[in-house]
Image 1: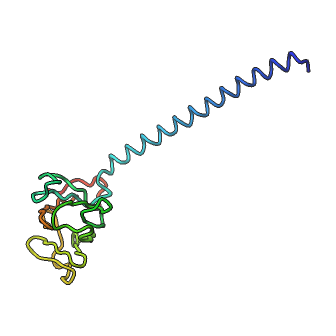
Image 2: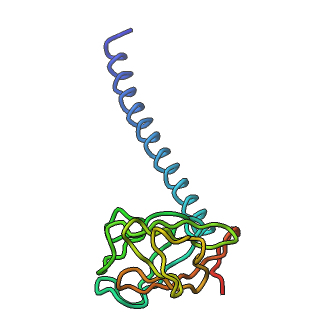
Image 3: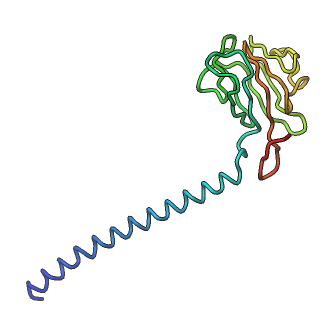
Length: 165
């Protein structure tokens, strides 16, 4: 092979490889956008599937304005620090104040931690009381510390997860 032909082929190969690299990057980016849009469509269809409902702040916390909405997952911890699933930074609410879990056909069951108290619909709960005696249902009130919250439950078990009326 002559040196001139080799030089032309190597120059052409350089541009061909650069073009192939660019096509690989574009193809990867298009796939990423496609997967992201599919994820967004799926998330809109299953809106609320990762949560049971919402707690609406009625009164008692200067850092949470009245009417604020706190998302309620299937189970978790309510407290005053950001590592909790539901954060209520108010007086009388400990770092980790209570645990909760959704139980089908019962409701949202509250388990206050040691030394903590909560009230569900005017029934006082502490670590010694039987938590299932006062489960929260749609419209129930929860008092933790100085904060009063109202539970709004979403329909459970349906793909649409529409709010119950």
